[in-house]
Image (cartoon, rainbow over all chains, first blue to last red):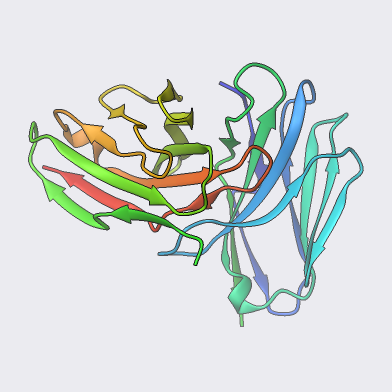
Amino acid sequence: ILNVEQSPQSLHVQEGDSTNFTCSFPSSNFYALHWYRWETAKSPEALFVMTLNGDEKKKGRISATLNTKEGYSYLYIKGSQPEDSATYLCAFRHSGGSNYKLTFGKGTLLTVNP
Amino acid sequence: EAQVTQNPRYLITVTGKKLTVTCSQNMNHEYMSWYRQDPGLGLRQIYYSMNVEVTDKGDVPEGYKVSRKEKRNFPLILESPSPNQTSLYFCASRTGVSEAFFGQGTRLTVV
C-alpha cells in the first residue's frame, strides 16, 4: 500500500486569511497527483490533476504546486472564505503496475471562521 | 448531465442479509472503483475495474464482490454483511487521464 500523507489534519483560519497545506507521496514512479475538495454531505469534486514536475495550477483563489522529485504538493487558498470550509484530499497515481489506481491521503479539514 | 449515480443513498440492514449497491455512469469511462470512508482512515479502495469484465482487488476487498458486465454499471455486492462493513461508500469513474467523478455516496448501517 502506497503512503500518501496530508498535513495538517485540520486547521481553523479566519475569513480573509491565506492558508496552505501539504500532500506527500512517493517520489519514485510518479504518474499524477490529484486534488479534490469534499464538502460535508456532498461528494468529492476534482480541483486539479497535475502530472509534470514544477506544475502550477490555479482555479480562482485556489492554486497548487507540484514537486515530483521530492514527493510533495502544496495547495494554497488565498483570502479564505467561509464557503472554502471543506476537506481537501490529495490522491497519488503511480506509473508502475496497475497505474489506474488512485491512493488517497486522509485529507486536511479546513474551517474558515467568518 | 455527466454523472455517477449510486443507489440507495441510505440503507440499514441486518447481519447476513445479502445486499447490492448499484453504481452507474453516463460518461463512457473505462475505469470505475469503489471506496469506503471511515473516520480517521480516509478513502480506501475496495475494488476497481479497468474495463468490462476486468476487475481487481483494492486495499480492503474482504467481504465484498463486484462485477462489470457492462461499461456503465459497477455494482458492489455484500454477500453476508457484517457490522464492520457499516460505512460511507463511494463509487467513482474516470478515463485513463481524467480526474475521478464520484457518486453521491451510500451510507450503509449493518446491525
